[in-house]
Image 1 (cartoon, helix red, strand yellow):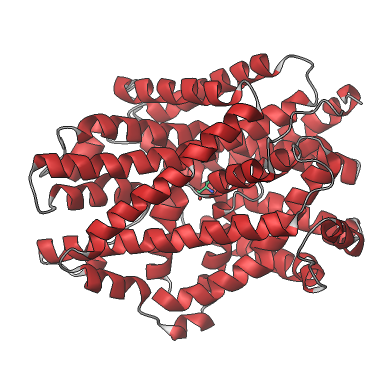
Image 2: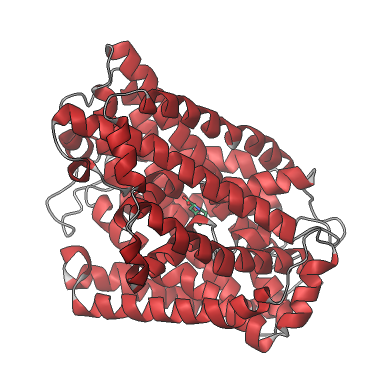
Length: 494
Ligand code: PFF
């Protein structure tokens, strides 16, 4: 066991964790969440969610990895026999997520290519949906593979393979570049953004507080949901990364640094996004609320439109477009390979093949699974799978982890464990968060999502598509998790 691969330093581990946490979500999800849920007032539930669920659960995942020195599934199984299925389920969900996350990265590669000529100028929306994705009229019409998207996907997987096949040494080096770089680039975009006309209007929209939202439960759930996805909780990633730290490692300090940096970058990205949106709104003569958006639309339509309307000519536009998309690549790639690394770490516990071989097959499987998202109906599938994997995947893993530690294992003993080598000692508040607050919030949230799913078909897609890409997929992953756990036990290595 002592020949386990190790991070070269505590900093490498923290950087890699930050790299996983800081991703597309910080740029395309957080700013809009703030705007849509009460502006500056949203920061209150957000901060409470961070302190009562985000950080306590991150400490659980770090401690499980460090204490057990195993991949997510075996580590959980060592906490309580049988609990390993939670880890396998988490890894299966991770696999599904990375299979489409890598396709989004492929779109970014395509946009890097188009940035040189700012090819979308004047028709950004049609360019994205019609030209880049070549979206078909309906989800039932697959329409074959869109080859440039496939090419980007292949490039992404080759890159992921080369980053992780050798182990932590290379990962540590890669994150020492890919984590600070987007921060610097965002800073450049910020300077450009806030010096544009209309920027202040955009920022007012972003942060103008509406305290009445604090009485709205939806807003609170949005805050908890955001924290979950943003900190990569419930995917097995943080457990896997922590399992490569030595036993006597700080836990609470690392969790605080990771979580606070992640939130800081989210907040900061909001300034970049909204100052630019303010400018776009003013250039188009529309209110900011008309141009604001999130997700795919923000990154590939709204922001590119704003860039193509910046003062200056094509060269300036091309430079800012490159800065923006290179930022996205850097943000996304760390998150993508963290998911793959978690899977590889989990598999290494049960297969005796070499890391290189396991990594190769995982990457090949990810590439193959991603094919469906490269088709002309890929965007629709991506939307459905993303919605389910996030609303019912990781969050359920988080619930089970909290119940496992809070109710089945002894939470006070676990807390003592966290404190043993940590500079910051966590008090009894931690136990209250894990035993009560986190499970109550997650159960409420899952029930509400469940209810709204039953009430209306998600996104207006046909029922069969939502059934297969949503419910069936999650159920299959869950059952597979249980089966793998039963079979894996026999193969457990010392
Ligand atoms: N935390 C990433 C983001 O905010 O974009 C997304 C993500 C990465 C989720 C890795 C889960 C994960 F394991």
